[in-house]
Image (cartoon, one colour):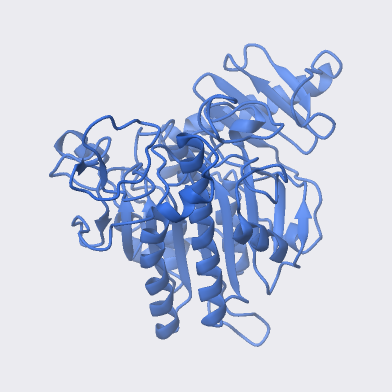
Amino acid sequence: MRHLYPLCLLAALLLSNSSATADKPPRPNVILMMADDLGWGDVQCFNAESPIKTPNLDAMAAGGMKFNRFYAAAPVCSPTRGSCLTGRHPFRYGIYNANAGHMREAELTLAELLKEHGYATGHFGKWHLGTLTKTVRDSNRGGKTGATHYAPPTAHGFDVYFSTEAKVPTYDPMWKPAEDAKKIGWDYLEDLDSAVAYNTRYWNTAGEPATENLRGDDSRVIMDRVVPFVEQAKRDGQPFFAVVWFHAPHLPVVAGPKHAAMYAEYDTHARNYYGCITALDEQVGRLRAKLRSLEVAENTMVWFCSDNGPEGTAGNMPGSAAHLRGRKRSLHEGGIRVPGILEWPSTVKPGSQTDFPAVTSDYLPTIVDALGAKFSDERPRDGISLLSLLAGEQNERKSPIGFQSAKQCALIADRFKLHSKDRGATWQLFDLQADPSEATDVAAKFPVVVEKMAQTFDEWRNSCAQSDEGADYR
């Protein structure tokens, strides 16, 4: 399927005067940062018992708003990533799982919309919304066999990119031990004489494999590309949109000597997991400091979240969902409730926090609203603008958040959560305000709530199915 409109006419989809006026502040810069498989309980500002040092994320939360109920749109990575860019649930655009589908040409992305408003746009880190090469074998699907899923960031509104299709080791990202390489990770290699290629490459805007500055901590390798992008936009007098999708702490986890030493008392897996998160945290601090030194921090929206909950099972893997039930791949809270932070000094009061349920699909409508723009197309969007929440004018979410993943279904409102493991054949109901750990099914106590929420879910699911069949593109 192709765009209903040529890219040069995408501006018609947004009706606004994008320039600053006396009554309207300058267009905000926008940064979307995301960790990979970071648990809700891994960051100290959400879970004081976490052993992981995250001083910069903690400072970011103290300087802005902490979302106590922030949700990834899916319990696995690719679908969530698409929701960040489209404002839509992944079942609308055919990315139902990780390593499945690709960003369709007919989808309108945040990068495309902001580019039409004069923004410099860049993607850095894990893409996971399609393959990045048609010619050589790369990552999970890249190469001739995956050519139908070729969908680089430049095909979806990004001016520049430094991206991988999927996961890489979190230290020395292009290499792995030649022998005995464990999928969960390893201690850093002091030299690469015995290493072999990991075979997931970084690709650049020219569609070529990157060859320089690929040693050391992967989060730093990514940020080394983000900082010059931001500096160039500042020199050019352009607002900028940067998507920074870290690989940490997705497997295989590897921490460099500095960060591994900080957790020397833990076993191999835990010290590398904890260390790569602290390394990521340092790069968050580096970016925040750069924004201040460039004098653009005041009007820059900096978002941070994770794409889903922690990998593995509790007790066997070091990631933490704290008291929440479930983990990655589950639509229970531990699989989709993730650390959510927004820092935007011109708009968000420091030290703010909210229990308002928000989701990654809210990024696009919130940012479009911040531009004072209006959509002129009528395709369904599942996210809502959060500007009224940030202004203290809204404390209830009027439209519940729908979820689908494999056979699992869920619908989350302010108080109640409807949950099913069998596509809605049977339902459970949880009172998240009284029972955030989902310990007690209260469906029998509130049958009318179940009936109404199930009807709402069915209507929403049917709408998603129509979108997936292409109705929104005609």
